[in-house]
Amino acid sequence: MDGDGDGAAEPEERSSSPGGGGPGAGGRKPKVVIIMGPTGSGKSRLAIDLAAHLPVEVVSADSMQVYRGLDVLTNKVPLDEQQGVPHHLLGTVSPNVEFTAKAFRDSAVPLIDEILSRNNLPVIVGGTNYYIQALVSLFLLDDSLDHMDDGHLGDEHDDCEVDFNRDRNALTFDRLKDIDPVAAQRIHPNNQRKINQYLNLYAQSGLLPSELFQGTTLENWGRIENSKYDCCFICVDACLPVLDRYVEDRVNCMVEAGLLNEVYDIYCPNSDCTRGLRQAIGVREFEDFLRVYIADVGDSETSCSHDEYRLKENTGLTLASLPTNQLKVLLQEAIDKFKLNTRRLVRRQKRRIRRLQTLFGWNIHYVDATEAISSQSEDSWIKQVVQPSLQCVRSFYEDRVTIMPNVEAPKSSATEFLQRNLWTQYICKACGDRVLRGAHEWEQHKQGRAHRKRTARLRKSLNRGLVTAVEQER
Image 1 (cartoon, rainbow, N blue to C red):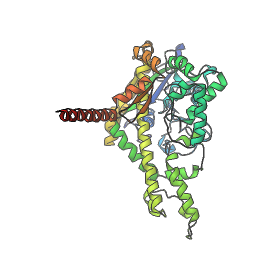
Image 2 (image 1 turned 30 degrees about the vertical axis):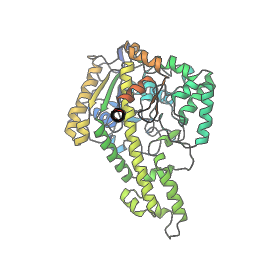
Image 3 (image 1 turned 135 degrees about the vertical axis):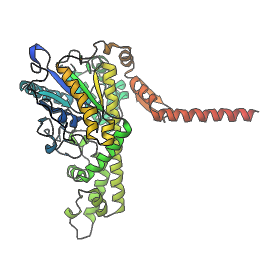
Image 4 (image 1 turned 180 degrees about the vertical axis):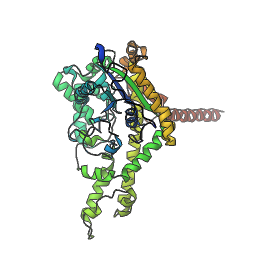
């Protein structure tokens, strides 16, 4: 679990200014380390372990951990596991507000300046890639673009297809289609959060989202050669089967650690799940269970009070105490959905990190945590994750390696191709008329295992049909 572990075995003496001369000295750009990676890879744990060797302060770039509440569900690093390392933007924002990419950038920049003024090393840690893009690229620095928070790469929740209010969604989506049919084609009709962003952008700027995205967004959102910071990007990664198993185990641990009580406390029927903390994966998944649970308890004629039926911290006790079999089924379904949606999040995060590298030339240094996660070996974690990352950071501060990207990368043929096809809609017949938006998404889909299996079965079926037809003709 992110934040676990007690760091390297033998801490070294911490220097007062990494790399000599202090961060940002001599008129150079301030140096910032950014630790990226999918959920469950160990980003927070790595940042804390680096603090055993360098004067690190952590700035969280997690769009859900920034909010107060749901500490178990959002997997915040507990205070006793932070090992004295200062953590910023962790549980500091009201759960009812929308903390946009611009809000993150505006909060993180002064924090980074303060950390640098103390001759400490700012380490940005999180899986919300659009937060990181807003911080390190020029995008959003122009006030006229403030409302285009998530750009063409989207955010970690932008493909949510949960239908909370079909009638309301249909009205706003139809309005967007009337104003900008090209932009409407780009997003899912039930993605109320993105629909509202596009409508607000048009209302405040008078510009069509599709025109603005095709021009300024692709050019700036992700390009960092003129960034305010000199960035060292480290991605903690692991193979999908290992991450999937880890995610399942972590969800089970969350339920046993009090997840159900947290979700119970935040539950509000018909609440807006497109803003604030209620967007977090793991909130909506339990809505059906909680609705029936509360109704069941309220109608119960037993002598047990509502408090006595309150969800237990241990999942086994919870299942045993539920008054009906229906509730047990709903709870298990909710847990399974939580696991499924977290696995999907892992895949989206991996795809988006690859895009930052391939489309915008980010020089991302990958460290492989597969063995450390699968074996739960502290030695493997230190040798394969901590030590390579520490060497990368030290080299970065000593200017022995080039961390900034190739400035020509954004002008590559791949980027130009994406720009031409960003708004093209593709329909995959083999996968049940699934709609893919943009050339890059279409190419990624064609390479997917499920698509290849379906097309192979389709070809076999067609071949069998041809053989049968020929035999009948004979």
